[in-house]
Image (tube, rainbow, N blue to C red):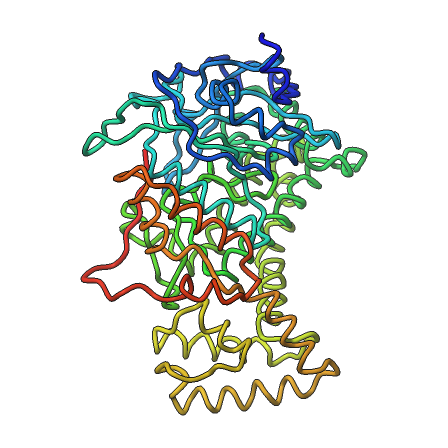
Length: 489
């Protein structure tokens, strides 16, 4: 290990390797032939205790490419299972290697994972590689989500490999370095129930508690507490998705984290015109993971998590089922509370009234009827710029606006306070699909990353409402067909 690699600031521990080895396989990345650094997330690197300047040199590049393993890192591929479009499958990291866990100067622990560094024992016929476009997409969207205040895995770096990836055509290969609170998934627990002993399941649950919910370790039934805490975090997370019009696209149980972070940005996108039936993923032909279905799918996934914990909740299965039913039944209420609180903030409402839900529903119904842009509608309401669209010209909206103004007038807070709340709750910009595609095209076809860099800069301050954001708030030109996204494998 060279002195230079140490100076980059890597400070690894590997608590995951202390789990039973049924949960992972030790495996090293395949070296990239001609790696080149495309982008480094300097603020994130610094927050992790890394030397951002050193990471931009040869030694940082070699780690991001999988060509060098930092001291104390123990690369591995994790095993897990999952319901993919409701079909249960045994899975695992087919194109990802967990290098280890970076311990920050504050003592926090974060997974450092390479995505696209070659085949693993779980690749199932895949090549284990990734193309540049999907890796840059994850970088852009995950960092935009972070800026929006939504819990998410993050992107530390992207490197090109200098090798082609063969999909429908030859594409430039790339590797993303992903940072996560952990990569523990609902599917990790499903894997444990399907193929491990109860003792191994207990070890996994204790590990998850120690890592993410240490405050419940001493609870009388800490596994029931674990279920409740994961439900709380997922209810809050999915409400945040809905509030900004984010569509994950592939809410399989292996894509739901125990930590409550958004993970696996494949066919994800942000909604333009409001419609709960919106689907972007090319493989979601039935609309299972449509925008309006996301809250319900979250509950379905959490029910699968509850099933995986049954052997730990109580030795008697009927008693275990009864214990699990209460927190699962609480999920819709928790989600609705989070969503309503967020929608009230988007409309400048500080207090609660029973008719708020119908006021919100009426607005959304009008937005759907007029295909009003989700983000820009709330942005226009924030600044009182309600003109120029079919929605705002309609008589029904004028009636709704009168009701809203009356509702605002019944609270103690001033109009200025309401607008400030709305400014902080309604983003000026989101990663518009056409802007993301524009950035990816420039990078893939011309090697021009300046378009992406400018987009990332604008997205890093979504609530700034600054003049330079105006052009990024404009809608795409009408197209012949719907926008489609792909998993990027």
